[in-house]
Structures are given as structure tokens and as C-alpha cells.
Length: 154
Image (cartoon, rainbow, N blue to C red; front, side):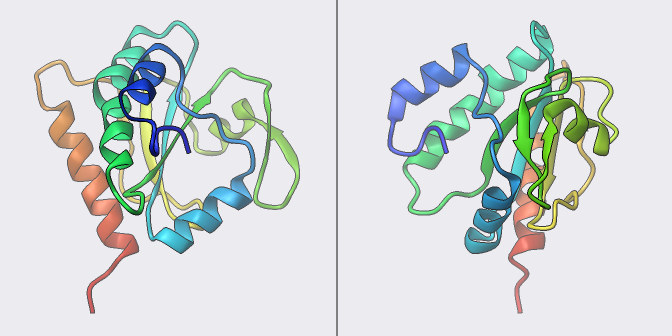
């Protein structure tokens, strides 16, 4: 996972480039289960200014914050909904990022969605970018709610 232990360098890299891509969903869901940390995916397209703003202003800074924690609060990755880049799905089959995005009916970007270890969504995805100044609050609430669903209190 990009950002753990890399400090300001990770923040700069994540701001200027895409977030870590998905390689193998089986490994990611195993980490979700082990850490009880939701999988946060930014669905994007190349050149999308709103995607870049969500990545730069709201997600990349969280990579730096997570570097200070012993365990991740969430696992952060990015999927290009137009990409033919292969990823390994939960069955071990190779699919494309575009096919993965289509499975969740992602047709517009940016979309931030949180998933559990079964790749079930944890709450409603954040679609688009709120320009009224509430996006940070919406994102924080979505992450907190997803974490609580994975770590229920007894």
C-alpha cells in the first residue's frame, strides 16, 4: 500500500499521480479481513479534473496520516473505469479495470466507494465532488461508518 512509512514523499507522489492500482483482489480482501479496514476505491478516468481534486485534496493527505498509524484505517486504491489493464478478481480470473467498475455500475466519475472483505459496498458511494465545502465531512463520515460496520462493538 502506497504511503505507509513514506511521509511527505508519498503525499507528493499521490497528489501528482494516481493512487495505487489494484493488482489482485484476493490479496486486498484478505487484508481487509485481517485489519478490519475497509477497501476504499476511487473510480476515475484519465484527465478528469474532479477526480484529480478528490485524489489531491482529500485522499492523498490521508496516505500521509495513515503512515503514522500502526495499522491501516482503510486500504486506498484507484480504478480507471476506461482501462483495459488487467486485475485478478476474487475467483482468480483476469478482468480489466473497466469490467471491475462495470460490476458496480460506475458510469460517471469521480466515485469513492468503500468495500468489505466480500467486495460488498459499505454504504452509499460518494458520487461527484461537492463544491459547497462539505466533501471532507461526507468522506470522513463514509469512512467512519464503513469502519464501524467492519468493527462492530459487542
